[in-house]
Every structure is written in C-alpha cells, then in structure tokens.
Image (cartoon, rainbow, N blue to C red; front, side, top):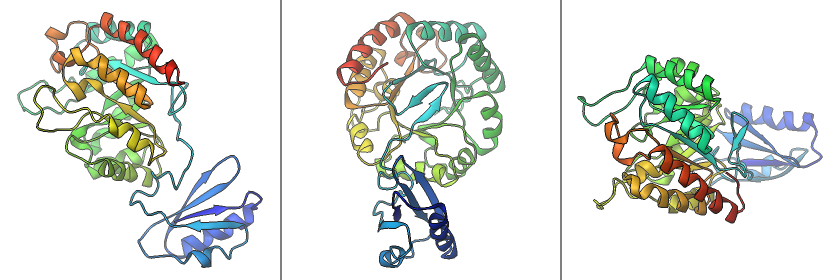
Length: 337
C-alpha cells in the first residue's frame, strides 16, 4: 500500500502515520516529491484497511500496490530514479555510455581501452576483474590486481568504473575500487549477494538473467531496494531462445515494458545480447530509440587476442563511429549523449 500525504501535511502528521505503520509490524518507505510525500508500507502481506489509514490528519488517500515488487513500482514512486554516476544522473535526459573490455587482462590493455573510449565519448569504464565463466578452465579474471588496474585507469581518465561482483564476501573489497557494482546475469537471483550490495549505497547495475522474466528481474531489484539502497540500474542483456544466429535474443521490448512499470533506469547490453560485433551497432541504436537510459558496450583494442568475449567486442575506432550515430538517434528522441 502507498499512503499519499496532502501537500500541506505537517511533519507531525507524517510522523503519526509512520508511527502507526511501525506499530503494525511494518516499515515506512518515504518518497518525497516536489509537491507530495508518498509513504510506502513495506512488510508482511497482511491487508490494511485503507479507510482506517485515510482517517489520519494529513493523509490524502491510501492506495493498494498490486504488483509484487513494491519499492520498484511506479505506484510507489511516480517519477524516475536518477542514479548518480560521476556527475551524470543515469535515468535523466542524458544517455549513459559505459564501455570497455569484457575482462581486464593487462595494464597496457585496460589503459589503452580506457583512453580510447574516453576520447570517443564514453561516460564510464567497464571491465571485469572477476569473471564467471561456463568452463572452469577459462580465464576467470585477474581478481584484486584487475581492480587495482581499473582504479588506475579511473585516475588517468576520470571515468567511473563499473565492474562485476560475484559473491557476498567480495562486496566490501570490490566496493573499495568500483563506482558501480555489477550483478551479472548468472547471479541475478543470488539473493545473499543482492542483500549484500543492498547494504551498501553503491550504485548497482543488475543484469537480467538469460532465462528470467521481467517480473523476476524487478523482484531481484526489490531485494536491493529493501535493504535501503535506492541506486539500482536495470540491464537488459538478451535472453536465451531457440535462435542460433545470435548469442542471445535482444529483448528490446523489455526496455519499454520495464519503463512502464518501474521508476528505475534501464540500460541495454547489446554486446551480450547479440554476441557478434557486427550486430552491436544496430542493437545499440535500437535500444536508444526504444528509450534506454544507457548502453554497456564491450570494446577491446585487439578482440582477436581477447581472453573473453572477443567476438562481440568492438575495436576502438568502430566504437567511436558508433558514438557519432548514437548521438543522432539520441537527439531524435529528445535525449543527449
């Protein structure tokens, strides 16, 4: 349930409502807009009589939230969440552009890539220090050494760092180096990990699992929000279907469908969605046209030598060419890049 306070409600009236909610064994979540404060009632599924709530002074109305994801719902917060990222507000008018290699492989590789994507117009640097791989024999990332190289690249270029965290016990360490904690597709329903990143106030980029519904994605976001971290960015990265011409099937529908249901920003990952560098540009342009708040694109100076996902990585010059085209599409849909 959400409780909409009147525009002239006093702090004392708001406090009385919160005190009553807590007396029912539930929590109050405040969403303070320019004109009204909305109080979300979070807790068990025991029904609350709306007419009882509406008797409180300062309450305009009480409305049930039918969606199972309460905090992520547009009913709870009717205006977009803006996630801070080094001066940029992800979810605002500017489309965020996160670019870099799938994995950090060496100082030379990450520094070259970081400088190239910065010059081309990227707003953040991506790079994996810990890599979940299908095969235990594949490159698993450089670990702490990779995090240190990402921090060095940030210092050199000024680009904030987006990198994946794979386990709850890694969260503290990764948070010391990363500006955004990425939850990969395989970990979307690792609830202990979701709770752990929720206890931080670091922005979290939450990728949709390859076989998960949009509602399941929103419920995973709810775990993070419920721990008190409002800075969640959803990511559509393609889902697994029967199609074999691409790595995954890019669900561009999800961008519009999610934005119709949640106030959280939605970005797209055309690299994993298509799995082939030749298709990344087209999928990127489509995502921005569909309303994506950002893109996360894999870029590598020598894709043929990459230790992971080289086939879907753009070379820096192709990335720079794509940015020019993206800027035109962004302007056509009243956004900036």
